[in-house]
Length: 421
Figure 1 (cartoon, helix red, strand yellow):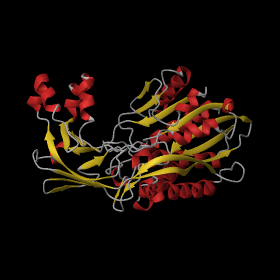
Figure 2: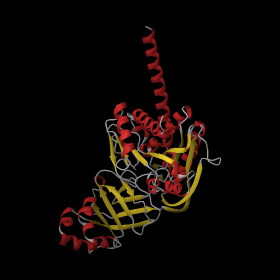
Figure 3: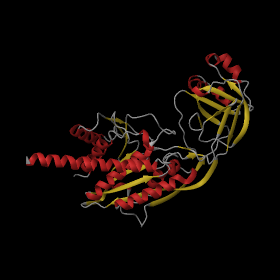
Figure 4: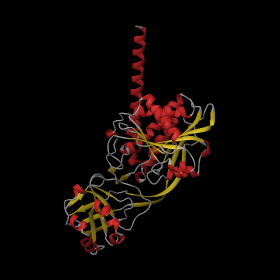
């Protein structure tokens, strides 16, 4: 009877702690992906609001600071959309973020064009295509499906040169719209539009947009640490970027719940564990800024490190941590084979995830410039879940977090094993 009571009490305490942890995770993700954060970009300075929130979280956890501050400032150029861009075909007004996305390097534009629609029969005939493109003009906007560019236009450099003679390009996308960021404004307006929303192939096109190129915009990395109890000169580095794509005007914003409020929340949860369980090695936690603008914050850190990079035993970079139904990917898994084998074995022992996949070197997140400096690193992202990415649909409410606890436990076990505990 006593054992049964003890087991029941243990289960109740476990479920209570689990529920408390996931409630906290949800609150952090909800906050970072909320309209208040304005997409955590330069537009509306949502990244600064997010950075302040993260600094408060680090202080609450008890992370130590470097020279009395979590902040490491840097500057970069970024094209932003302080007002909502407008696009109309005939009498139909398209919705920014939902029906169309402007190219990240969109210049200021207020004008109208005749529509020059490239149909499938013309795209399939090289002779007709050449004749079609000869009619290019600054008074026309070329409208074409994305497949035509991939299969035909890119094969002929002369055709690509003809594209520059158009006043604008409208690229029709089959499935989803994805926003990027740019440090410049291009000479030609380009818009991505959902093909399902482009029924009118004859009417004139009107665009009005006032993007602002912000020069030397200030952003920051946030860094804190726990000093190791036994081997303080060796470091485990955990990182996650906190920035996202910002907003377009006052009402259209890109929440970035999975990318990367989820990764930031995971980093903070791991920090909370090591607050209560002091690590053997020193552990640094870094929230990078301007990842979406080209890994700018992490590159700056490697050029202005707060500790010798040679002292890093291993780096773990976290991004897209909300899923896991189909396992997890380890970028650099084919390079650091010893650590990958350790991770695989831990996953099998714990029966945590269905699979751990691996790939090679990739400049797709903040680990990249560290590995270029000789720091061994994995970039982890979970697999499965929804398709929302770099769009207005990446909302906190869409995240199931169904495998979040398993990912957390696996990462924790991996970190502990790396430091020999």
